[in-house]
Every structure is written in structure tokens, then in C-alpha cells.
Amino acid sequence: AQSVTQLGSHVSVSEGALVLLRCNYSSSVPPYLFWYVQYPNQGLQLLLKYTTGATLVKGINGFEAEFKKSETSFHLTKPSAHMSDAAEYFCAVSMIKAAGNKLTFGGGTRVLVKP
Amino acid sequence: ETGVTQSPTHLIKTRGQQVTLRCSSQSGHNTVSWYQQALGQGPQFIFQYYREEENGRGNFPPRFSGLQFPNYSSELNVNALELDDSALYLCASSFRGPTNYGYTFGSGTRLTVV
Image (tube, rainbow over all chains, first blue to last red; front, side):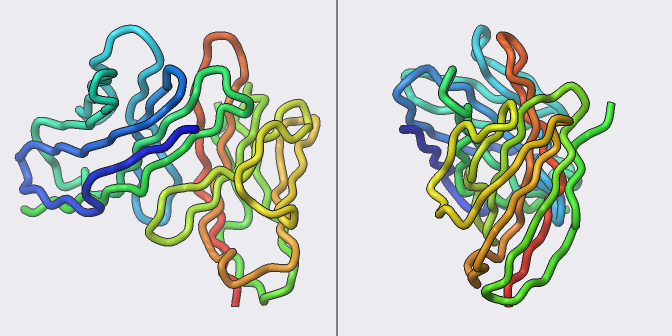
């Protein structure tokens, strides 16, 4: 079984400040981990993913995330928030080689960026 | 390279009716997954189709069914609609292979059941 917990359903940051979105997962086998962004009335866009190799993963729009196995975490960060970062962010996990390779999502974190 | 296309974008149905949602997968992808996203929640896995057969299913009743066609496009059918079926339905395509691992999501179909 696999599950994802995102701490904080809403996060408010000032423009130019650090963005930190927390994600913890549970998985019985080594996981693949993902962060997606969803803008209003749109589908999901992949920000970044971890499969194997380097634990610090860089994605689009200046985002990065670090896989920490000992902490079962995959937190998302961006050094300087921009107004265009206002959106909802979802962390997801998938088990390697699982039938269907389904994605299990967290509940999401909505980011508000204040000018 | 075309992305994932879903139709229709919005739909209103009456409780008890049936609905069909459609998805065209991204070029080169052979697997289609469907997700239900209720308002304010993360997407929930409904099922996945690979080689025209269901290959993995989430915790959804049998009135949720699907098809995959030889061109890898897919349909999601929901019978006997209930009010709780109101949600954004997302289709995601991917390529099942030894090294490539990534999903491309469509923009979704917003279903409202009244």
C-alpha cells in the first residue's frame, strides 16, 4: 500500500520569499515520487519527478525537491516566489513495477502569493 | 507532438443517467489512466488501460467502466450517476516501457450531476 500526506492545505508566501511545500509518503517498496501543479480549471502539469539516482531533483519554473529516504519525505522548494506560482500543488507516489503503476496523490496544497 | 485531449470539457447530467467521457492519448503513448478529482481533493485513481484491457483498478464500483481502442484512445463510462460523482475527471497517458516513466495529463472533464 502507498499513501501521501501533504502538510498544510494552504500556504501563503510573499513574492520573493522561499516556497516550501511538505510531502511525506509511505510505500512498501522503493517509490517513484512526483510533484504536479494545477492552475484553476486546468489539468495537472508535472513539475519534477524522482525515480532513481540523484536525490536532489530540479524541475521546471525554478522548483526543486529532495528525496530523503530516512525521513520518507519529498519536500518541494523554490527560493523566490513569483506571482505566477499561485496554484495548487500535489505530491504523488507510485510503486515501481506495480500493476497499473497508479499514482497516489496527496490532498494538495494551495499556494497564495502576496505582492 | 500532441498532448492529451479530453472531451467534453464540461457536462451536466441528471442523477441516474449515464455518461461517456473521451480521451485521446499523447502520440507515442500506449497506456491510459483515469482519475477522479472531487472539489478540494487530490485525484483518485479509477483504473488504467493497457493493450485494450483493464490493468489495475482503484476503489470504484463496477458502474465505472472503460474502454481502450487500438489507437490508444479511451472512454470512461459511468452508469446510474449519483450526486457524489460530480467531479473533475482527468485522463493521463503514458508509455509502458523499461525506461520511460512519465504521465501526461489532459485538462479534464468537469462533470456536474444534479
